Image 1 (cartoon, rainbow, N blue to C red):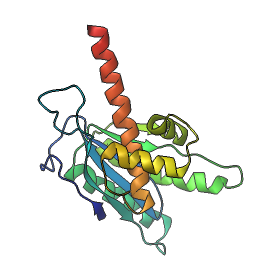
Image 2 (cartoon, rainbow, N blue to C red; image 1 turned 60 degrees about the vertical axis):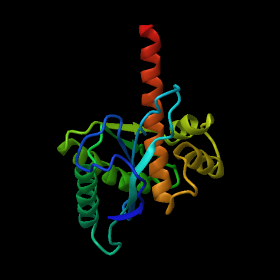
Image 3 (tube, one colour; image 1 turned 45 degrees about the vertical axis):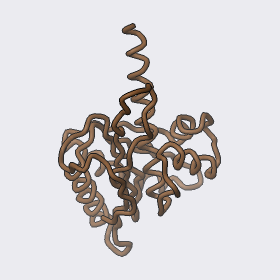
Length: 194
């Protein structure tokens, strides 16, 4: 595992934090991950600060390893992240296939499978999001260009710069998508109670 971003979060790894989500951008060579959680709410006002990036980085599998070895590396790396930062949920980008490259979708499904297995072993619910849903949630448009997505990630997380490599930024986007959907759902429920 290689960490690339570490912001001041709860400071208590190993403890489940309500609202904490792990976002995953699956890949056979490089799997990006991002752990975000709600920031403490200010004493006054309804709108709180942006969520905190507690940890983010990549899990790198060796290119010359056989497929089974790469999947083992991903599986063990995800378990490490889930053990260090137990989340309420794991958000995972769904496999999308292009007719010209069906093999890519099949190989990515292997990576998603071991990620989902790791989450199941730790009792963490997995929520899948289509790329278009992630874009729409963060920008309001399901076909948003990469630059617009990058701006949304930086703005929503209150970062000075976009996390690198792009696998980490994509994992942040998946985590943010789930975080915002949960926040909006909670607001909807609170509105129905009143």
